[in-house]
Image (cartoon, rainbow, N blue to C red; front, side, top):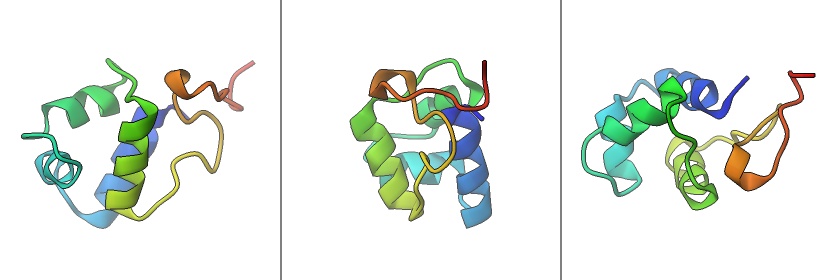
Length: 77
């Protein structure tokens, strides 16, 4: 599972919008959250940490955290 899918799943489980998550991590609106979730952009490691804190979850529990973090995707060959 890619990082964007993990972000989307965790955000939806918390019942918040992309805009709300964006505001919780110090971004205006939800445009960057949309880009992360759609896979258009990988968030930086510091952003992943802020998202994890805002959602109260760990996004690296299974597989890839993000390409910029140097972790691998265990679901891929």
